[in-house]
Length: 276
Image 1 (cartoon, helix red, strand yellow):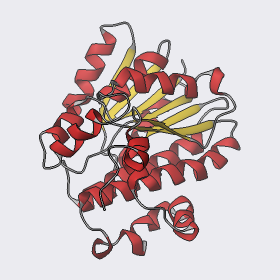
Image 2 (cartoon, one colour; image 1 turned 180 degrees about the vertical axis):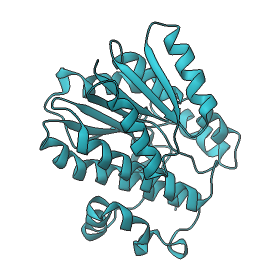
Image 3 (spheres, helix red, strand yellow; image 1 turned 45 degrees about the vertical axis):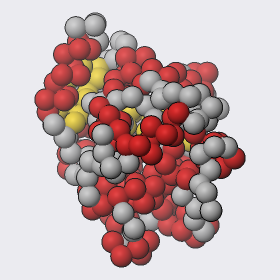
């Protein structure tokens, strides 16, 4: 038996974090496309890690429970890395809500029930939520605390109240951040910690889909006019995750860390500021 990392979403950011933190652990990676999980496992196993791939749809609580149960066969679950999700150019509104919002909430809830003392989790949110007008305190509380199975019934998440897939994505990522705060309280009762990271434009296959999608020029302009002047890399997100998931982050829980090269700062106070 060895400590276990549950990793959802076999993308580049998740892999960078798993490579940074998963040595000496049994890593269970789940992805909606089993070939993605198998490809990630092959790369990591050939680099000396111990990775088992599984097919897992984040929008299915049953699949989430199967992923967790497989991990528990090998030892105590000590780490969660959630980098699963779909982007505004990849999926319709309904799928974004079901996967990124409901699925993330269910995953954080179920792992929180079994996470080992001293355990830690990180989920990937997005800078996109920072560009949406603030919600009311009541709306934030609903996103944070509504029972998971009732989340998709909230008025603010009904199709008539969502403008497009980008608006849906922003709402979802705002929910992820609030959910992390709420779940971190429950994780704390088990002696575990939970945080989120909100990356900016990070070069991954998902981001390349966005570059080539209907908002491609918007994103290219964003990283050109952010203070960093470039997109980021998955390893730079992993740098933040390493702090949050290591003992050096022992006093950090229920927090969200913006890692966007200054794009959000530029959006509010610089050349990316929308023109009236």
